[in-house]
Length: 369
Image 1 (cartoon, rainbow, N blue to C red):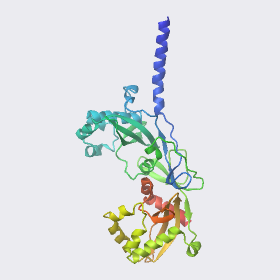
Image 2: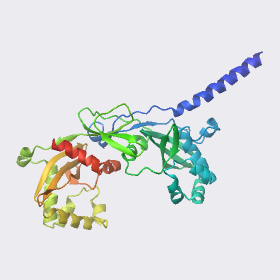
Image 3: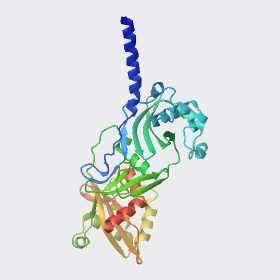
Image 4: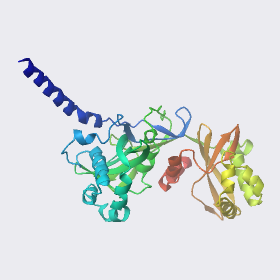
């Protein structure tokens, strides 16, 4: 009788354990804004994308917990089966994980023999974080070598009719990839302090269909992506009397280009990157290109700046031969209380987002009003 009760308790414990296993994959995604320029206390540019981190230790052990489960039932099972098929060199199994739009691309980007050889060096993987935008999912994880070294890896996934598929059809300049790649959870499990975005100008992206992403006016309860900007508009009347340091820097740059003062121009660049920039092959051609552009500028329309911590972006337009050019950005940073030119944003993906035409057009509309 005692043995029978023990067996029942054991079976109950096993049943509870199995039923609880999927819960660690059922993470609650949140869209707390994170800084891309500056920090949470002094932020010039922030973004929000639905994201969350997984509990530590989720990897190949999913194989035992979801034995016999359809690979397309959960995004995480795609990662599991992708890992297994790559290690086994199972081309048909691997290709079967992908959506129809990716199928014509697979033979060009996947060499199954090379892949199998490479994955023989990996013994496990560990899930790190998950991002969602409409029907798109991005999972960040580490591949773990036999010696315990970790290599970052990302898989893109699309949800189609309640099933999940790996995909290679999403362009690298997709706003979802750019914003999710800049998220703190892309690199770490550490919690971050959210940004107060109440007074910030925002650009909201919504997925309309699998291939269409639009900027919309209002936020709704779907998994949108939002960009937030703290923009300081210039008062042109005050600038003429007392121009701020970054405006002086901009005009010093233009004057040095026009007067071909290469030595003075070099010294305008941040000492944190000056030596590396000047020694690069592209620095002199870029200097000459800027000379050609600014030599016949009639006027500069100063619009505003985006400022966060020690980083600032000047927003302006130039007029040449009665033609007003699109919005331009000049990146500057403060080093020992002095402002210098900088080649780009400190956060790589902040720069990629700011290069987007749709972002620049939205910023320009805001600055003109």
